[in-house]
Length: 308
Image (cartoon, rainbow, N blue to C red; front, side, top):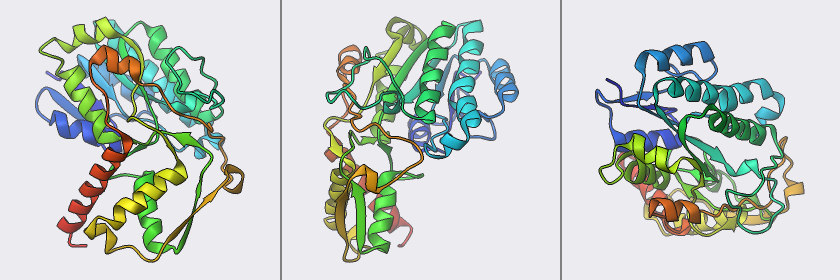
């Protein structure tokens, strides 16, 4: 019997959660072929046939700029698919862990956002993720929704890997310095979910989730700008031998958002207050600088293993 279904296992968060949970008769790891969020009838049949006690949904449409011209797909994947999961689980008493984003806010507050703050998304992506949250809550399913921000890992597509590539290829890298947020390491989020929810002090996770149902912010501690994040990556790479060997003579230049035009508007201030999650789950993610170094070390180890 499938007890836990993890979706989106080829993504950076899904991969980390899958690594911790393993893959046995009680845990089903699903990529897009097994659970296509763009094919709602197939998704509904899959859940109805498997009847997992818990779905950990890490799948999402995350192409923020592409969503501006592909709203239908973004809404289907980020809103309608979570609604299907929630409603199917609700039929037989299953639970849902879902991940959302800082993009549900407009960035005008200038102090860390709490869960009680009113969302005001600026983009199609943000609206689609907020609609997914709303659908889950309205379904009545037992749920935990974790909003995170600036997610990265040692794999898939993310800011850390993009910067490392640019540091190899370009002598001058321009990075926005007027958007503020918290870089969050996918491995830290996965560890939190595994330790503090799935393996929650011996409780049945169904009861554990039901008693704590709601929306939580979950990010590493501290904050910076994209430029500050890029500078920290460069400094860390320069002191990591395997990465330093790949770097050229590169300089970073801070720029304003208007100098780097994108299809979708970004919140200028996207820091999330994670104190509620810390209080309820008795845990907190580390400072973002420590986690970034851990990620760089992991990238270096993998590079050496591949003989690069």
